Length: 119
Image (cartoon, rainbow, N blue to C red; front, side, top):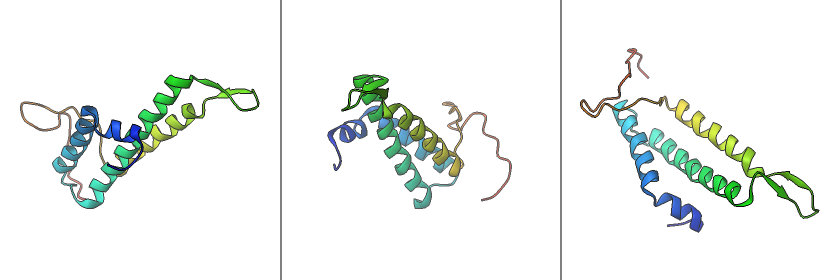
């Protein structure tokens, strides 16, 4: 697997697999499981990894960091994490995914209402 050790570590987690599986299942449920949409899931998951890396950096170095001149400033990972999170939400919205709890009994997304609109 290509990428940094941290990227490989996150992409190999159970949580990563569960998030990706849930997104792909929702695409299938909505009839959007074409490469055009599944590629967006891959993009989302790349941001998912990046967000965890940014969180790690904030955990390691804190909210404030000292630069090479001795000045204290905000850890750039804080604002980058917010930007990454916004982009993740934008990806979900761009492919029409919304948060729905899955009904384990019926296998459908609880609260999903088909408004009859075709893509």
